[in-house]
Length: 343
Image (cartoon, rainbow, N blue to C red; front, top):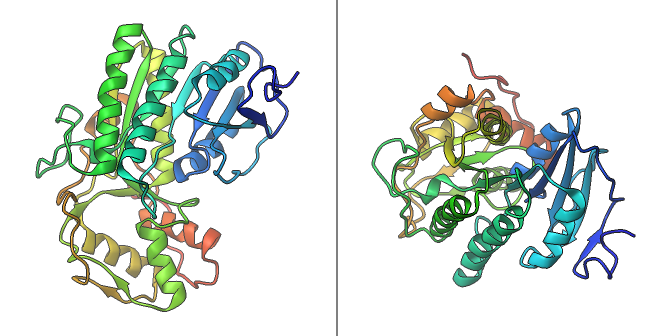
């Protein structure tokens, strides 16, 4: 009987056959597979020998690219019983929680955003606590930190008025407490901004490319805020490196910032990308106001990830934007920039 049949889990259904992977293989559950990070995580996991992946998709989520080693399950992420049934059948060795609400337009209602980002995360952590040795990897956010006026470190306080950041900060704190209470092996990763293939909706770089495609100006704030943007492919690699390092070294509760390691103003960052792509778009700085909760200095200190994970960003951000344009805005004729960051 398939896990999607009513007698087993009334609120889930299979999109592909549900195999029984060998017990010595990696068995990874992934949420947020339809997003940018999920796209890159699936791509990297599918290339790993012995990795079996079950991707949990919300009913409204688009179906990602299919891979032989990945099965997809539609599920209500608030339904602990349904998720527990799926995990019981799959017997995961790791759960990577990327799914989140609040970074695309239109924004959800404030309380709905908080409920999803906090309650779903705790539900998943609770489910994982029933599987001895299963690692829980929580994808938090760099915007959860209190602004410091310098690159942010993992020990800096989590404290922000940004709605999305506040929800991630709350979940981050509660999950670390739950993990300590119930002995859940946990890794926290706090990515800063990223883009690349799959980022085709309403965030900064798809909005920039859409404006260029439509031949209209791109209105922005003054652009003097410091920002940290990275290729999504690099962030995904950092998430997997963090999970593997903790499993191998026996560390519990470690947190890692993942970002570019550079500090540029938003204006400088956009002008650099536009120049490298030879993108024809009118950047109109100063046409929009800052949001009242928007941090002015948001950049990562990535020294811990470099030191403990041997991780650093490798892909040129402009190349990640070029890849996004090739996949989702093919009418744009852009110059292909250098792919790799010089060591």
